[in-house]
Every structure is written in C-alpha cells, then in structure tokens.
Length: 219
Image 1 (cartoon, rainbow, N blue to C red):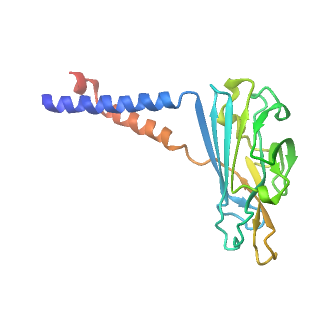
Image 2: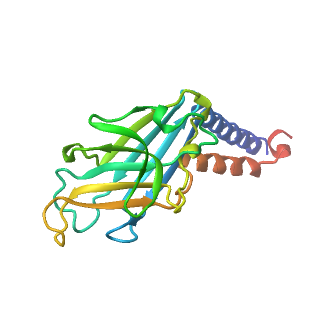
Image 3: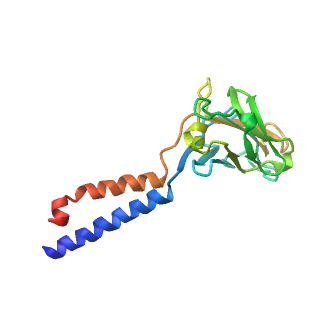
C-alpha cells in the first residue's frame, strides 16, 4: 500500500510540475488560429490558415498567414502566395488606430489602415505587396503596440459586419479555365479552430490531478 502511495505521489508531482512549467512558459502569451475556408472562385474548402500569437509583456502581435497549394489548378507556383491580407481589431480594447501601429513587414510589403475586399466586406487594416514576385506562401508580420497589455490575440480576431474574421488574395497559380499563371482568388475565415495543444495539456493535466484524492496521496 505504501508503494502504491509513493507512485501516486510521483505521478501527482510530475503532472503538477508539467503544468507549472507550461504556465510559466506561456505567461503573457495568447494565441488563436483560423482556417481560410471560403473562396470566391472555388467555394468552400481549406485554402490556408491564420495563426496569431500575442505577447502582452513584450507588446507584440505576430501573424503567420499560410496559403495552401491544394487545388488541382495550382500548377505554376513560381510566384504563388498572398499579395494582400485583411484583418480587424477591437477598437474598444486597442487604444491606438491601425495607422499609428509599428508593423514589421517582409521586404516590399506595406501596412494600410482600412480597406475593402472582393466579396468579403470591409476591414480595419491590411498588409499588401504591389509586386507579384514578392507574394508570400507564408506571410509573417508583427505589430508592436505602445500599450503592451493590449497585445491579446482575441483583440485582433474580430469579425466584420459580414461575419468574416480575415480575408486575403492568393495569386500566382495556373487555372486552365482562366489561362496563364496569373490566376487569383480571394479567401476568407469565418470561425476559429479549436484551442492549441498547450491548452489541451492543461485540461488533461487538471483531469489527471482531479482523479487523485488528497487522502490517497497524503493520507
């Protein structure tokens, strides 16, 4: 019986330590992810992904926007990727407007405040390039805020009046029905995907701890 109690104590403290480590590692961080499931040309599908990681200690919000080359028409990928990406923010939680942000963009990409899309409505801000050779199949950019505490992922994941959280234009593929390699389509996101693995680890860990009664561990 004592050996059984010893093993339970080992498991308890191992799980508790893992939870503490995860909590420390994620202090100040928040994240959200969205699949780009809408296309103005091809209908419902899975055309890309938006991942947001915000740090309310450093005051940064990082976007990673990925375009998938999973349509049969995607043949010429030499200049494939996003040339525009649109998003919203919660103006009641973020004190400064988009025009005042310091945005670290890739070379030849530019930040703009407010803009409209083809079929997916208006957005508060967008990033774009004007050259096809600078399209990005994976676009990374970081917003630096004056008020670090406002750097929360959900503050930059607001749906617009038409129900779309994000929109972007993917170009540089070859659609035989359109001809050439200059085909483009607009994509959009309508809902977040489930919470990432760190959150699941916490939930699983808490479930494990709840199975050990205090009397079993220390009695």
